Image (tube, rainbow, N blue to C red; front, side, top):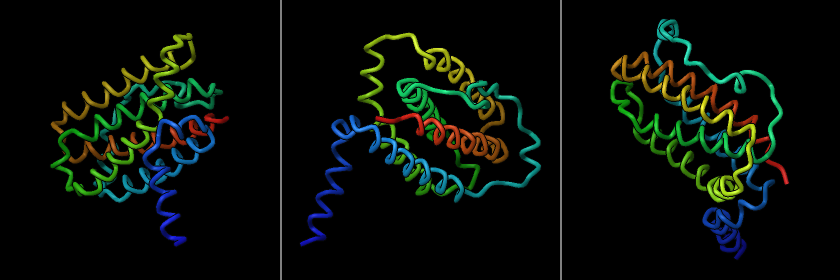
Length: 186
């Protein structure tokens, strides 16, 4: 009996993202749990030797990602949503040369998709208000940063070393996303 009730509660939490997104504390909890899972999954993917990291370049990571900065809740949500979309897009590229497990990548993509689904109703609401925010200034910088990551992968023909460099960048992104999640409060 208790198991059935617990199962119903879990299903309710998983499938009613729009209603749950209004509770920022719950959203923050869900995002943190999902980001931890993403970090764990990405860490399970084999990386190549240290010499690959010597091949990295300056992808022009936005300064806002490098330095501690205060974000408004709305800005944090806009930036998180944008980053998740780009990371999702990168991980759908050709990673066949890496030896990565397709199952792990699929699980990682599911986690990212779930995060975007939870953020999307709030992101749309924020965008409709059309207020000029800090998020508006960061988003173009993020676009350039992710464009540079994609260009790097393409120029290296999606080889194993290039994916190792991008894997490290994405792990850094997850750390920044975890920090941003802290700004999502009621």
